[in-house]
Image 1: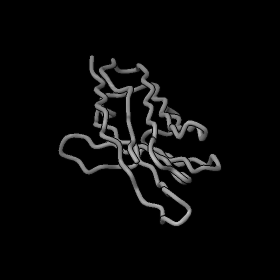
Image 2: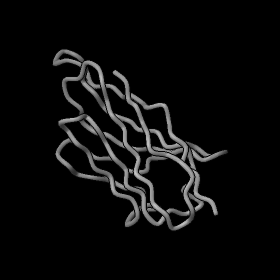
Image 3: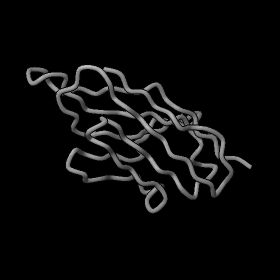
Image 4: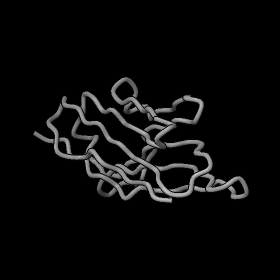
Length: 120
């Protein structure tokens, strides 16, 4: 199983970016999918998560600005980021809780990370 993230880049404060992360390989079911971020010198933190039924959870710092969504048919999760601030600058990692087959237990998989830089 692999998670491939894309969509990072340089954006000015107040701008928008959309991150995507697609899971591929032998996949039976995906429960939760989410985005984490790690800024320089800081610990990795949860940004947003979404379960297969559609319920979502957001960090307080991004509520009202970021929106997480998923396409279950394509095993893909998105993060729409609006009103970006310099403090949103970080490497963003996608995460998914995946069962490879009916007989496997679910486990966490991580994407490679994509850099988001918010700067004028």
